[in-house]
Amino acid sequence: MSTVQKWTVSEPYLDIPGTLLEGPFHDEARNEFRFVDILDQKLYTLDLAQGPSSLKTLDIVNSIGVTANIAGDSHQDQIVVAAKHGFALANRDTGELSYIRAVWDDQNDPNKSIRHRMRFNDGAVDSHGRFWAGAMNDNKFVQPGPVGTIFRLDPDLKLYRMVEQVTIPNGIGWSPNDDTMYLTDSPTAKIYAFDFDASTGAISNRRVHFDLAEPQEPDGFAIDTEGCIWSAIYGGGRVIRISPEGKVIGVVSVPTRNPTCPAFVGTELFITTAKDDTNDEALPESIRYGGRLFRVDVGVRGQPKNPFRLEG
Image 1: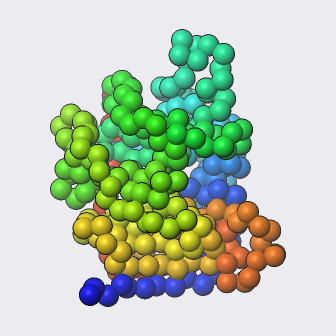
Image 2: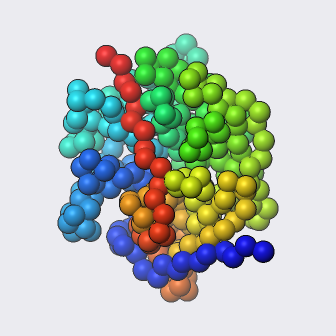
């Protein structure tokens, strides 16, 4: 019987009054860490050399679910994001958005009803620079239902619908040998695996890789260099490490019910969280830190993040 390794985090690394923190990203070249607040429509950036005192906050006109860097030198002042209506460039200094590929337009959404009730959530860039991201019901306006879609935006800005009928699309990532793609659909409590063709971006043979089989939900995840998935368990107050065989081999406990997504900074795991549905002051002190950022050294490194290879 294998031993489950355990870590416990007792206090926030960054104590901010967040609502739905998501999209953690380590920009190694700049030694920066960034994340978003989807519901409060904010983009946060932190200088890791200076620490929490360097936090920069930008207000965003539309919600952002996930961000990525852009390859090359022509967009140094911008990042690419999956925002409310599709894929956009965001100015690093101002937060100004400019859409490069909206997914709802007047042809497929003449009454603007779809673009109103949908937003983008989690995503990632594959080894060939394609940006994958999932759209879902915007819970500011309607409860999530099985109407979500995983989109793939290629470097030439061609858009593909890759997975349909997802409820809350979360963690997307790839195995170290790049032949398997993983996808979380949170309300199902499952992480799915697909065969992945890196050369074409095609996926096939969907199956269950991990089933939490509990009332909590797997949220965003990060994948380490050993091929293990670190999945935030929303409602469960922990991040679990799942082996390539689909077994839980590690648990990080955090002082909130709602961790949302982890990201690696060296061997440290930075963990975003969401505010509890209950007023913080009414909660036990041990779980009173929803909407904060945490970190813990777990002794393993994450896979490098791929940049979006925007053409032109």
